[in-house]
Length: 295
Image 1 (cartoon, one colour):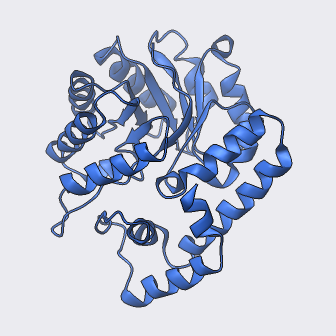
Image 2 (cartoon, helix red, strand yellow):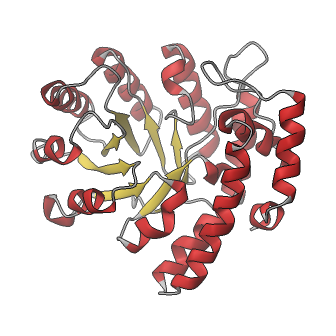
């Protein structure tokens, strides 16, 4: 069985000028990240803008990534949809094309405990042979209570926990006799999640400084907490620079700076103006961005 562990960038979906999926752009970013030694990819999630795409676009994205990866690293496809039937189709398509696992957020508007449980059980049953990950990102729902009702789902393999509540995250980690795999999705607190015992990181900023997060992961693993904290602080200053001008647009511009053009974000995110791009570059110059990107 696939070992899900380590550094998994939440892949940016490269876009064409008219807002479609740029196959060459996706392929270029995949190759860049594999060249950086990432352990896997998380595709089509929040950063990958999957929920803003048509089903055909999401299938094209899955096929492009999985063909390019060609089994070199595991790929987890995020296949959430407001329609359970569409999510099932996307899950089956991803698995048929070689995905190592699938994942899903608690979809928007699924704001009751019962609806989320029913959605997850139906989705997991559509690909019973494939590891399934719950993506915890809905403050209206108690994830601990939901996951308690999913203990009997045989292919529920773990969670991506995007939140700052380390206590809640640890409660989830200790469920199912501690057998679930847990990824942290809050890049700004990766060091603390690793100290709590997560198996890996999934995040947007891993697209451009994956080596920084590997350094954090490994430093905590060997007990060098001071080195891990120092690297986290450097990475967070880069993140702060992106937020200072608008994160989603800045994410695309940052990738251009390191030589991978992924186009502009899809709505509802907005591309940076020329002034915003210039401001981002000035802000990045005040950080250790170049050093971190080189790792």
